Length: 462
Ligand code: 4AD
Ligand code: MG
Image: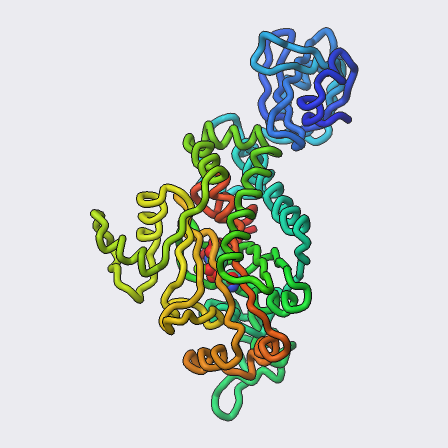
């Protein structure tokens, strides 16, 4: 069989030839002696129009009755149709039914809301929007690997089940083989993990960073790219309990190098998707977000903005906008503040750097002012925080002191501290929320619509 993608890409090779195509019926209509089927075979965003005539195929009556969703195999001749909407059509000489659908198929030809399509997550990749989203998701994942591999980064598979809390924020899903209804207890009432599979308290990883840093100190430049989990009970359009994160880590590098890497990577992914999924991107620009191409071109061709947290607070205080949450040095920026900075002030992606140490993770490098850390968040219009990263604290004494302040036990991080003891160097890294990047590239506004089977609050049907 020939793929519909090759029909579109190498049309000349197939015109006036007898070919076979296998796919699913998207729409079907017929008049007395002939009919049209829009077939999609999954290889390409666009459909192939099949024309079938009573005089040419033996099972004409049967074919006019097949429901949408049916899988068929069509043999016929490809003919160019220069005056029609589509560039060519297939004149069928034979149509075989490979797998029947039924008349209650939920994806009849009409507009469905994204909310409804979420309830049929197993069928939604058959729609235009989701076929485009998930092909772009696949390409973007490939682009990420390509970007890092071309630069000599080593891909490290960090564990999904882990005994440490990388962010020290406690938003973890427990992993245990213990009977939750009958937990074994120590004398002091604490849970006795000696009967657990791992012999200690474990959880699903919130970030591969700490393990990634260990490989950074061996390979110099590494990246992770895998699922991460957060038990945040935040029911927003930008948070999921299970999401994928890309986390590079670079040695002999500081915060500036880190931001350069992030900017190069993001531009690379966008360019790759524009070049390799032109039909899908065109569709997003026409039907999902009419400003998409302007926005993406602006990003690819501009230099990202830079502002320190302290400067950002000053600007926000002077803003002519009424914010719901207070703006005060020392408080974290809320989504409304982030959006104001990137959408109203800069109108492009912007790195906010040097946050107060108390609102950032323990591993970030303390600045000379003793108040702020060498952190960076990349904020982008529409999405808000896309990337979070920092230069890491490489000085053992500083790191130990910070961990003490935060009551983090040294024993739990002994291997992490070893990195500072044995040839620790200046190093930095960041985490890109992969789903947020996909939202940004496609213009989709809900994280549930860029994950095949989203895991959010009260959502684990599939
Ligand atoms: O800012 P975060 O929490 O940073 C880290 O985890 C660091 N260890 C990364 C590093 O330096 N290696 O998360 C990084 C990014 C965020 O900027 C955001 O894009 C995404 O991960 N993210 C989420 N995406 C979807 N749903 C959630 N619940 C997310 N939490 C974070
Ligand atoms: Mg963050």
